[in-house]
Image (tube, rainbow, N blue to C red; front, top):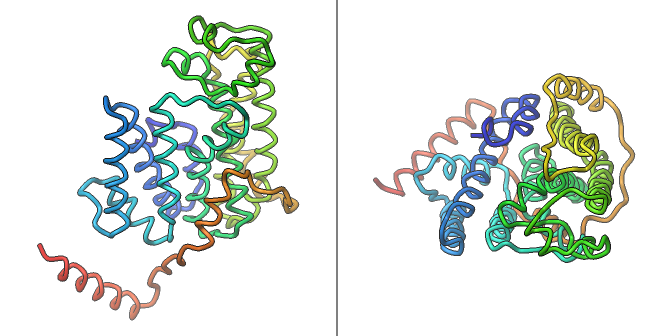
Length: 321
């Protein structure tokens, strides 16, 4: 699923330690299933309600008999992922399905926090980093990636009746949103707007560096790889003359391999702590992590493993057939 759904995420995940890689793919699996369910349903509201019901059962420890639900339930329990985070993700999918538009950059940030900042926060938790500043920077990285995706997919989104560019930016450039949606085409005005959007993404990519430095050393190459690979999509948009309507930005395989090597080198470098405040619309995620319980430490000694197994069978017996 992850290999077909997000080649960039899949490539970056290969650099993770196996235990973190497995957990990250469990996160991705549930996110992908949730996104597809809402996006492809003829009744988006019903699909969202269905997802929220599945999430309720996941957090009660009784997930549906679906691989993605069972895997996510395990990860959410082990790493104490607060329910507010996947709920926010589902809310972002609901915004997508409703064709919501965003007046300002702050409004777009709020969307990016839900559909991508949430993933950054959950990834930080499975790496067992819960510091508020690290979560803030993880949200920065997620939002930066989402802004890059938006810059790349302008034409594709318009063909599907969607636009994510800040409406006040369109107005400043003299672009009528309805006229653009009816007949999207590249223009100097659109190029300036996309350059501005990519500059905002780059600002957040830079801010994320201090957060990546707070991760376990073995995890840093993968997250640097994700940062560099997504940022390179922005560079490809620039090389296409900021034409995201008639051309699709692609990062060639040799360039990806070079960036993977660069990511390993970047992971050895230190980064100054960032005093930048969190994106305001991400604060509720940071607060949710701060008030959540602590992750479960896996059993290490033989005695701990026997106790864990005994408790497991006790729980299963109580649940019945």
